[in-house]
Image (tube, rainbow, N blue to C red):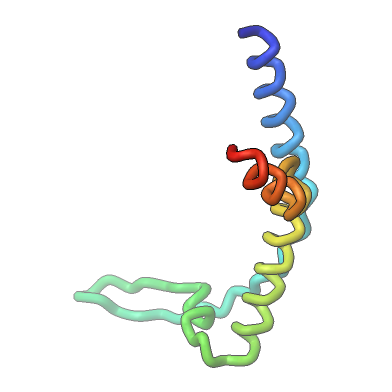
Length: 90
């Protein structure tokens, strides 16, 4: 059981290190203020709700690229690994 614990710890440590090295796209704040039943609410990221806006599309693509890069860096997530698992009935 001890080798399994060590493997888990090393995997967790590596994934934590990878996440801390990620360079996320900048997300500008554009405050929009609303009044709901007398309570002022500020939403800095409402502009991201307009999925048809070119700047939102650009931001989404940059986020997806960052995520894809991270996922590809994980051990055992490449296409050859998945294909090998299928071939061996895993």
